[in-house]
Image 1 (tube, rainbow, N blue to C red):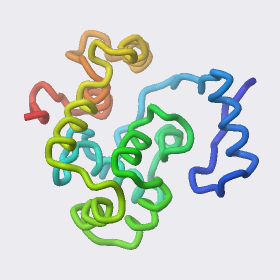
Image 2 (cartoon, rainbow, N blue to C red):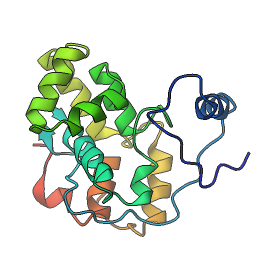
Image 3 (cartoon, rainbow, N blue to C red):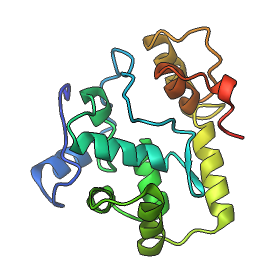
Length: 190
């Protein structure tokens, strides 16, 4: 099945046509087409290493929500929004960890307030997490692509994005390099 150009609605109601199509695609093992080019450098989109409270990546997800709502998120990023398109996307992982649906986080984020305020709402409304759980999850997220099941995909993306020869061990590293940040110079994981 060719799904090039397919843009599912992450806020659609359960049981809709797009939900059934997505379910059938993933149950059949279909893969979304690989990115053909590097991602854009988007002003206002922070590193996945940046922390809000006890979590990495969360602030980046909020940035993407706000930029998308303002019409400033490039199309190549829009395919990675939400929790409905791919179980392994970082947004989906973050939503599952928080115990919330992406659509609910979007609504709360667009109501305004600080990142810390949105995170506080997530922690109160979603699944409560201990400091240890947050530390383990953040460490896991920072290491995706390093000696795991996605290492091959990371190497494919590095080649596709023209980043061969860069000091890239994880997807977070690749994202930072691709967006013009050198994670080895700033050591954001410390």
